[in-house]
Length: 105
Image (cartoon, rainbow, N blue to C red; front, side):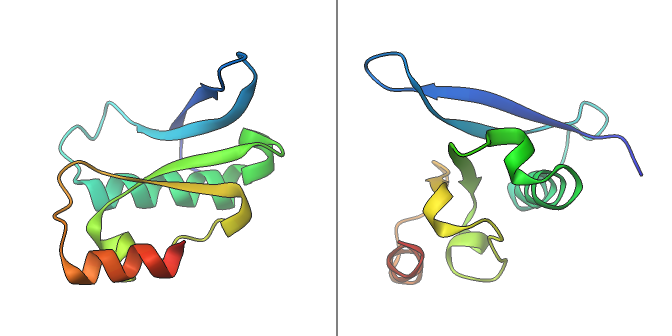
């Protein structure tokens, strides 16, 4: 198995209770990867190699999503009830993206 890193940043509520973790791509050896590749890497390693439960337990998993994941060109393999999709700031608001967001919600 190859080495990899997944960043895990806690997300707190107003009472400082951890509600979930943002899962982030971390690999200094590949600084030029695009958003699709970074999201896919996090999903593969978090979901398949480590298991989502080992990273977030029963908490929510916050995952950055590029346009490809929002419109269904790439799949989000995590359970819907445990996943919060964060839309990257460079994703354009267009009908296909909006329809994908409704489908994923």
